[in-house]
Length: 108
Length: 122
Image 1 (cartoon, each protein chain N blue to C red):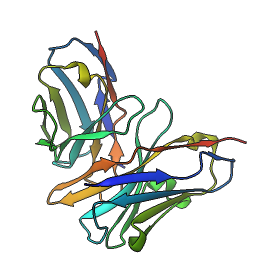
Image 2 (cartoon, each protein chain N blue to C red; image 1 turned 180 degrees about the horizontal axis):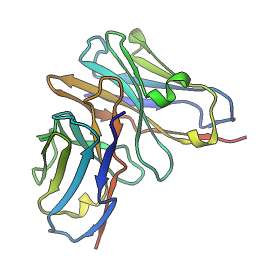
Image 3 (cartoon, chains in turn yellow, brown; image 1 turned 135 degrees about the vertical axis):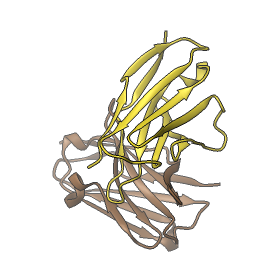
Image 4 (cartoon, each protein chain N blue to C red; image 1 turned 60 degrees about the vertical axis):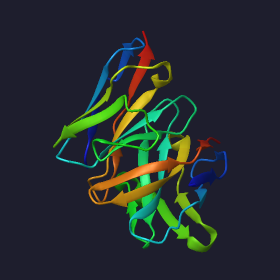
C-alpha cells in the first residue's frame, strides 16, 4: 500500500498569507498526485491534478509542484474562501488509491 | 454537465449489508478512461477511497475492505451500486460517489456527489 502523509495537520494563517502544504508518499508516485479542497458539510472539490495541472475554474493563486515522493500545494495569497481542509491523493497504484490525512487551514 | 447523486439507507444495523446507489448524468460509463468511484468519510475524519469501476467493467477495491465490497454498474440506468457487507459502527460515514477521469499520466476525481450519511447502530 502507498501511504500519504500530509504536513502540517493544521495551520493558522491570515488573509493575504502565502500558504504551503506538503504531501509525502511512501514510494515514488509522479505525476499521479491530486489535491482537493473540502469545506465543512460539503463534498471535496478538485483543485490540482497530475501534480501541477490546475482544474478548470480554480483560481490561479492555487498551484502544485513536486516529483518522486514529495509534493506541495501552494496558495499564493490566502483568501477568506480558502479556509478549508485540503487533501492530497495518489492515483499511481492501479490497485489502490489513497488520500492523505488532511490539512486544516484556519483563520489566524 | 456532469452530476452524480448518492442514495441509500441512512440507518443500518450491525452485521447488515449496506447498498448504495450512485445515479449519474452528463457522461457515459463506457470506456476504460472513465470510472465511477466510492469514497467515504467518517465524521470528523479523513477521506478513504473504497472502490471504483471503469466503463470496460474493470473493478478496483481497497485491499483492506475487499472481502466486504462489491461494485457493479448498470450502464442502461446510468447507475453504479456499491454493497458493503457485515456493517459495523466504525463504518458510519458519509459515502460519496465521484467521476474518475483518466488520461495519460493522470487519474483524478473531478466531479463528486453531495454524499449520503450512513449510520450503523442497533
